[in-house]
Length: 597
Image (cartoon, rainbow, N blue to C red):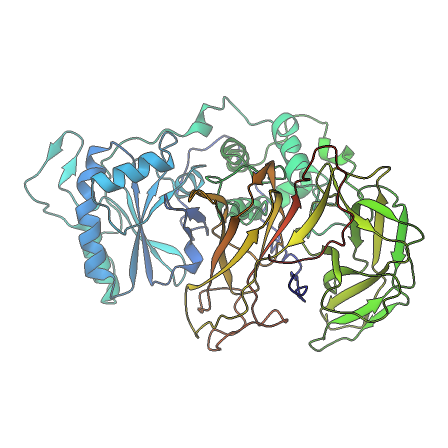
């Protein structure tokens, strides 16, 4: 068993931003282009890589809307590749975008291979939000975006060679090429718009008849996916407690849905199903975006959000059986980078017990960066590297209970050590965080353990966009996997969990293509995965140490392993339980540690 890793951190959620403008059009307008600025968006390509407009390392981003089976789109692939070759050194990147609802990842891949798309990414606009926000109604429309101010410098056909049912021997007007040539030469664009010939895109949201119902459709969606965080006392920057409030934030809601920042869920939907999935489905996202396009109408006097009782922010599971308090109030200075504090509570476990949940309650969320609770054995006074990992808190931890049928064992006399990491806010603060223990009435079937394959031997070069790392952990006995919890710091970019079975089979359990340090999400498998003895967990991932990473503290620095957020970690946390050797045997009353073997 290896030593308990020292750090499991997160930063508090950044706010939505400035209050959105408030307007209500008389009618339901068709999709129209955003004339002033292109909204930021984030999309996965068919290979599962994440692309975000504002993180594109280019002066110009060219979008070309495509669709499987479209003859003009197929004949335009070679033209897009040729233009990319011509203008890539000048600072242009080319992204193909598929907004067709009937095209899935596999069929897009097959089309790409058949028509030799090569390394040009095809992004999947699966909720059609990007096409709608840009007013795109047909495939084969090219949109060139100036990333200095995110305005459109050209939109229209690539050239005039291809139209529906007709084809010239050669183009007489090369609209896109001319516009890019003029832009990079610093000249005015002579033709900024041109007619588009292509296949009509069917917008599924248009099948919604009439006005979207706030009362019956939108308010219940907010209640299910958003109010848990966006309520008084919780971590959302504003409370979704009325139609007036969400309408006032509607422009910002549109932006964060398009960029996939909200709801905060970063798993690739192509791999695995998760019990705590808080993402919007394709139909839910389309419904919400259409409601915003309609001007956020309120169809009835009743406002369901007003009457919703949000979940309690202190003890979501109710009053604990035992509350473990810090021995004294923690005082946090106004400024400075603070070292970790290790504080042991005076509370001692009065008897042997199995716990179904160990919930950390951060008292002052303005300053609490993270909390880790470790168990000191009976009679133990000082901390050691082999202390038992019990639980932790960080933004995104939304699973207060251990998996059903499992628990953790605490012996009589056990004590609890708090690892406390605080941020400073510019004013002096105090904190009185607590631990709540919820007991089981009888021993569980299995003991849940937290393990973490880890790598500390990495070195990330200055400016490196995708510095790869990996870690391995072996299951020596038949084991059930419940939760997967990726952990990196501010330069973390993506992470993948794969099970390598003794038979040679390889299975992807989780892919997080857009890792966000603000959210330390526990991905709980909808169906726990049982793996045989001899299985390895292979965790891979990458760091983005470039200036385009908005979280990066300093892209000029070489980065290695370290405790602080400006340093890095690579840990593949997971909650697992070894399968009892016999069904009639009780669970092992072993101390539960965090290890990688």
